[in-house]
Length: 225
Ligand code: SF4
Image (cartoon, rainbow, N blue to C red; front, top):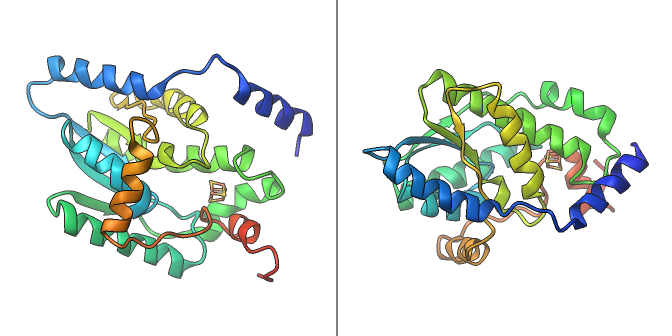
């Protein structure tokens, strides 16, 4: 790992020059209401039911939603299936009309390019790559299927840097010019509290690690893989 790059990154996180992506999302919604006569179509990348709960509620008033579950980062397969099945249950209990698209699970191939970054602290280079790969896949799907917008639920996580997430979204949008990236910071505007309420209300399974084996090892340091 490049220690200096990591130190620079930590320093940049403390900077006061941060974009308020929550306010930006509100402005964008206002603009959409003027621009689109009917609700535009948005493809929402979701990593699990807990993280998807509040973003779905927030976005449903403004968009016609489709959920996209492409998370080959999750290990092991049973965990991937469990998160998917909880997401399916949550949609069936809240809005069964929302379509859920899934992609094949290919964990080994997915993790290959991440291996050289295995010693990165969680929330740094390896994770930025991991967000970008899944977001790019979903963006590409949105483009080939005529969606107006794409975004991800991941900015709701306290462990994930929403500035970075939105920067990645912005740069990926250049590769997919027919789809707009919807900027977000779902933690804000009461999103974090509402996520906890919805999770409790629906008895959602809450995992204690991000997804890959490296993150599992982080939260279970005394267990051998
Ligand atoms: S910790 Fe999470 S975001 Fe980071 S590489 Fe693992 S699964 Fe991806």
